[in-house]
Length: 104
Image (cartoon, rainbow, N blue to C red; front, side, top):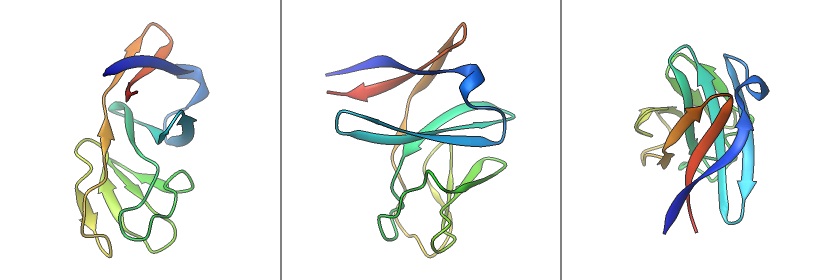
């Protein structure tokens, strides 16, 4: 079963920034760009490196270890060496609360 869980306030993650979270067995990052807030798994599909130290470039998040890039909306690979997409999580904002749909 999945449910939305409050993970942060909108002020906690300014535009252009990434913040990592670990709730239960769920490791993910929330990225904030000009289009809003997005959540993806905190693990590069290339070599399992954490994405939380990555960089944002528009709608992409880049793993700093080898430069793989992923689309924030779909998790699709946008630049190698990764070949497999990363998981995305549903995000919604209610007032100043950022909520992410997490699996139990």
